[in-house]
Length: 329
Image (cartoon, rainbow, N blue to C red):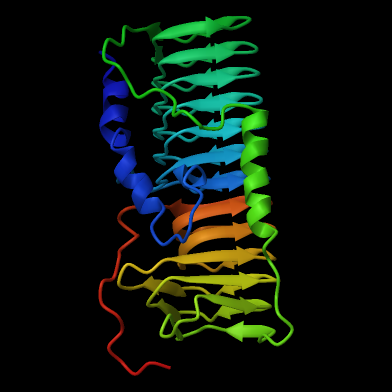
């Protein structure tokens, strides 16, 4: 049996629990969407991790442009309207790429389906490969089956292996083509269509240190929202926050959820997260998400490009069961 695929199976088959964690903090979610950590109308970038340390991407990834995940990143299924690139030592399930696909050195993937070339790095391991162009296998790379290609280049020591154990099949309802992706983006745009701001709302709201969810108001409307550096927003019960403009968190800012509370964000502008911030909730964004040095606990559905350090990482998404004990503002 392919030891690398066996390692992948151990790391990612417990996906249902991780997806549930990724979806924590969501309100009235579209179940189909919540299988995804990120859906983007642009490109998706997930930062490299220092080492394999569990699930740093809790659900699937889908983008109308390219998807790039860094070294040692562990994710589920990936769809890209353009190229897919997985970093060295990464571990993923099924890849569907509208252009080329690259699996990094010492990386693992289940099946790779690409409309253009496929490259598997040195000592990488995949199951089945289907390529619209050439396939290149690096030194020591392994595979189970090649179903389509225009040419195959074998690196030194690369070989086919028999994978007798069944791995998890691609999830029904997942994004595997342009039509699937269009359906998902239309659902996101429907959510963003509810974005509006009442005339009497605070135009620029600083939520630093505030505690939300203390009364019956479940939907709050703002123009722009910010949380200053190292400050915390506390959420005690379910709430939906709708803005007409961008949301910005300063470095080290965070959102704490209590008592099983959930938050849904509908943002009329970009989401900008400073270094070391922690974001929570089911989030719809009309624009880009800039969070390459930040951790997200929840889901991001954006019309623009998305960059994160991690999303749905079980080691960083900690539920707080008791509300703050200091004076509430």
